[in-house]
Amino acid sequence: MKKVYFILIVFLLASCNSGRTYFPKELEPIEIEIVRFDNAVMNVRAESAMDDIRLLYEEYPDFMPRFTEDILGIPSYDTAYLAEQLPKFLEDTLYGFHATNLREKEMFSDITDIKQEIDGAFTKIHYLFSELPIPMIYFFVSGFNSSIMFVDDDIAVGADMYLGSDYEFYNRVVYDYQKITMRKECIPADVVSAYLFRNLTYTSKDTRLLDQMIYRGKIMYLLSQVLPDEPNYEIMGYTEAQWDWCEKYEKQIWERVMDKKDLFKTESLVLTSYLNDGPFTSEVSQDAPSRLGTWLGWRITESYMEHNKDVTMQQLMADGDAQKILEMSFYRP
Image (cartoon, rainbow, N blue to C red; front, top):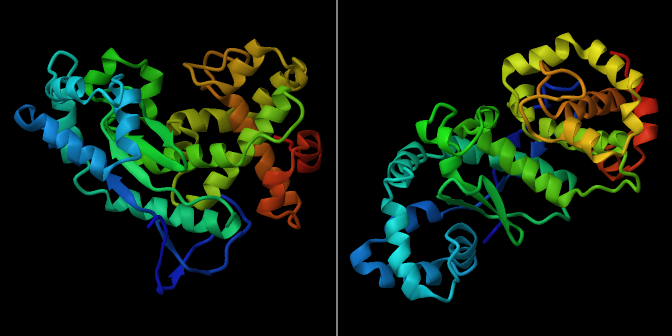
């Protein structure tokens, strides 16, 4: 079953990130099923690979084909070749997969804290948007291929991409700025944000920077409400120092955006600079962290909801009028 309800009553605190409360004190919690495919696949042995793989297909009929094709790059029907290659993948020393898998198994032997935070977030999401599907979550080892991927309505977490920013093998596969979120603590925010972006889609008819900013900012604002114990900088995927820099120079950032009239631009280079991950936001400053457009969108959305207390979360997420949200936010950093 994907959804389990308890008779227990839990008390959910209002988010410390906002003066508004969107949830009653009593909610019936939802427990998300986390499937430990990572542990199962690491049990495959060369001497029994064909039988082990057959068992994986039986126990994980939805996920095993996706893992085989998307992560290993092997046709799911070619079990003979898979039986040859999967043990090599698990035992590889050239690319560090063997050591990585052992570290993943040890680091994620207990995921109680991750599960509790995800359960709490989906309890709140279900209260606000009961029509959205409740996913299962698979943990898997990706060979440094994927952090988050979807399997129909379910979510898969490449746990080997969350072994700590200082993990030595990451130096071979990612840039330094990408390591910020490659920590175990980042999994709840990554899972829930991916889910929200997938299920609460972009509704504006325009593709201006303003519209993109507000859409992403709304998702970040909602994320901060359903993960109230996460610091804002963690939700944003920043370091604390990066968040502090944005707050310190918020007025100057906004003035620069306005002076350049970037809000109403649609050029891909401008959108990429403000919205995509990278070492910095080039349109503002090489000292500015990336995705500054999303950060500004979050600030505007927060101001909008504080100044318009009659607007519900559901109404906010359905509203594609970014111009109205900006004007009625009275955002003045």
